Length: 222
Image (cartoon, rainbow, N blue to C red; front, side, top):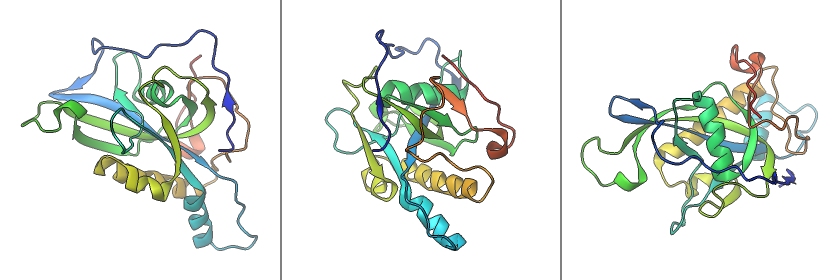
């Protein structure tokens, strides 16, 4: 990928453990995650129509997926939303802990999905039920080391290839929503960064400016 790997800080940040601060909505454990993505450089010919521009966005779109032990399929970073953070902060934290990336997160979620936790896939009733919210995260920084790299490898794939690698159907639906969101941004004044552009901030997370997200505010954390 065009994004250079950034040296990791000397002091490793550990991933959060346990569920003492976990948020719940009734019987549902609340989960937040994201689809890390980048757009490859591939300029559209001058005079190309709107449809060509839309095809170009999808054609340049690559997403970052992560692996889990003893599985050949892939997933996107996600995890429990805790009571000392906002929902988009939780998504950005999971991207950092599980995939070793930082970037610009959309203030508008891709959607909300109900699913079972990995360990409760075959259980009856609502045991292990989760309510998950997913965001798009435009990657601006790729770290060489990250807290959960022992259990989560990472892989950049073209978005169309990602459909065949997703472990769950709801993740494929989230990919559809990401493409729709990026096409909407392409038709507005806001333009996502190309993958070769330099990192603009060392912060863990940011949200897109108001022009792109209907009133989003900038949010930074060191």
